Length: 142
Image (cartoon, rainbow, N blue to C red; front, side):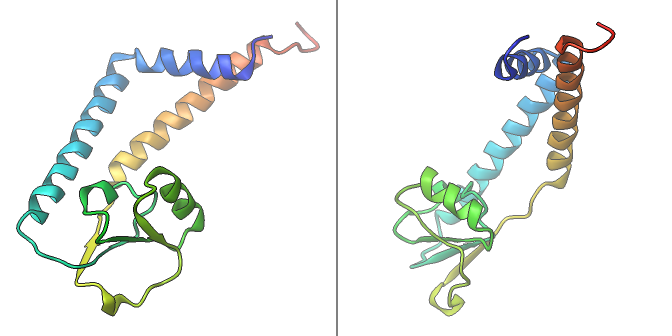
């Protein structure tokens, strides 16, 4: 029987090579990059001392901001732990700060259609993995 990591890797490689999935992933990556560039361009002409990224999650937008002025806040401690590991020089908070100390607030409106797409791809990966696993596992009739 193949190791689970090998089966997952082969399944992901197969799915990436499906043209429709590959095109959709590339489109999403372009949209994300454009969104970050828009944020960076909008901040060029704004003078601020401290910014709070409210609902920062894993710190996805933190690198758009000056690290000495940036504070990311999210109530989910697991997301904050991840963000602190990934963006070492940025400040992240899991407890609600005193919002009066910030002069700029950043809120990111999540693209739920993108999340729905990735969820559907994830379900497809799980389904493919189940088919492969089921066909490779020994059973009473095999």
